[in-house]
Image 1 (cartoon, helix red, strand yellow):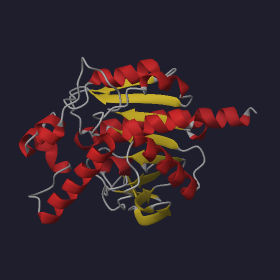
Image 2 (cartoon, one colour):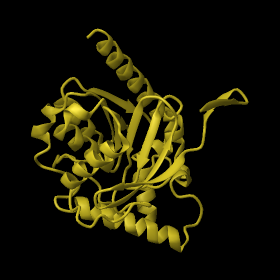
Image 3 (cartoon, helix red, strand yellow):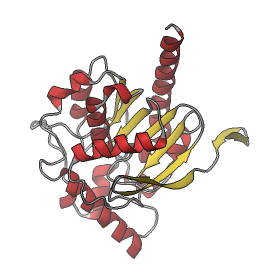
Length: 280
């Protein structure tokens, strides 16, 4: 439920759940009311409800699961690639009883979201890709975070390193280091070879029928903006947007700006869906 606090709209705290699906349990945070939004996170930030989620939940019911092997979700060792994650999220959607949810995916999660929309376009209400990985563009290679020192990772992820506390609050303890290692191990399992891309994806993007927004940070040093532009070029009637003065950790560095771009698109997509349903 949304309330008013000192003239500011705020949402109720999210609820935490563990969803039983084939292969194990999925850690899930959910909050807000309205049309369902399934949020697929990037390589970092699993298991947390961020300001970006809170802003989206003011107008939508947001479901934020952890990918297999990330955050609080089980390992699901039988899942070996992004194609397996597509079927995993089909199970999640079915288990949650979601009917044509909006899918919002960031970076690695954007790649998973795009593959999901390719495989089952009939199940997707709309598609939002935020700085998405997944394409192979030799002229615009992705940065390899696995080879970087912690300081180099911060510099790669943020336009303004001073805002890195949104993703890396305080001095990391042993548990934080182990959790980050687990997340990166899972990322490597799903995307090491070929590195963070599916060379077949480009020629399949024409299958996406959902209304699509591709939004990228202007100063992305991890997934160059050219990747988002290519997605927008190949997905039928996709819309492209860019948020200025922002690095790859987009919804940590500029949560309000990205939330505004996304919520405006989702509200428009929702209104058009309702209008088309009423005219039938």
